[in-house]
Amino acid sequence: MSEDLKLNRPKVILIAAMGRNREIGSNNDLMWHLRADMQFFRETTMGHFVIMGRKNFDSIPPKYKPLQGRVNVIITRNPDFLYEECYTCSSIEESIEIAASNGEEKVFVIGGGQIYQLAMDAGLVDEMYITHVDGSFSQAEVFYPDFTEGDWEKIHLQSVKADIQNEFDFEIFHYTRKHN
Ligand SMILES: NC(=O)c1ccc[n+]([C@@H]2O[C@H](COP(=O)([O-])OP(=O)(O)OC[C@H]3O[C@@H](n4cnc5c(N)ncnc54)[C@H](OP(=O)(O)O)[C@@H]3O)[C@@H](O)[C@H]2O)c1
Image 1 (tube, rainbow, N blue to C red):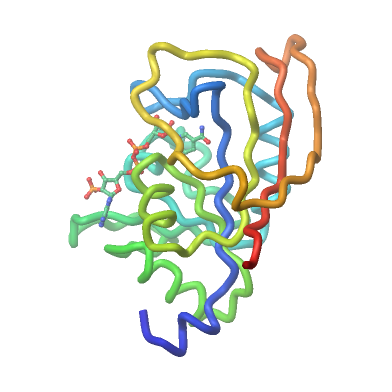
Image 2 (cartoon, protein in one colour):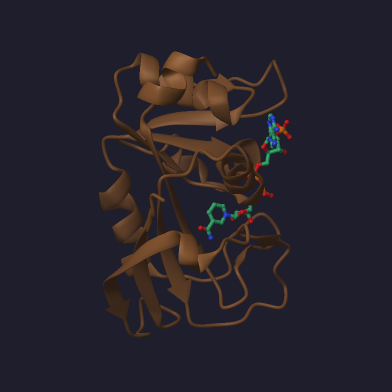
């Protein structure tokens, strides 16, 4: 990423739902059905660029692919990977450059685990929307990156109680990186 782009890049926002132990996925799928959280995800990301790993993209049911109303950007090492109406690229930096060159002021990184980790390791994450699911999931194989709570301002957005459409209680928080 060029120095100029580093200074002028879009805001990078991670959006994820995780269990009590940072579990986010198993068997290339989610481990819960939370309708109100899906709705929050849809409303929050609508109209924006959504950056995702190839496995996450594969896990989306065909009838929802590409995610409607959003520009889908897929990260893969496979130079032959193509999907109609989607951008394909080979790094998190390149995905952000694509959004920047389209004039975007913010982009959403929507997972999965490898791609969240890439964004964190590159020091590119400005904000996070995290849904904390009130459950433990021993079958999980994929986890959200470990992060230091103290580095973030945390605002509570929503609490939802389990019901017929939401398998678990959950709470949504908005995290903003503290500037030292
Ligand atoms: N709970 C949540 O909020 C949430 C959100 C999203 C996903 N998920 C879950 O997370 C799981 C998927 O996550 P995952 O970690 O297995 O996979 P992923 O991050 O979705 O995608 C991994 C793929 O990204 C590409 N990739 C990774 N690092 C790369 C690099 N440095 N350069 C270029 N390409 C790179 C590779 O694609 P190629 O193999 O094509 O090269 C790799 O196989 C699923 O269970 C899904 O349901 C959960």
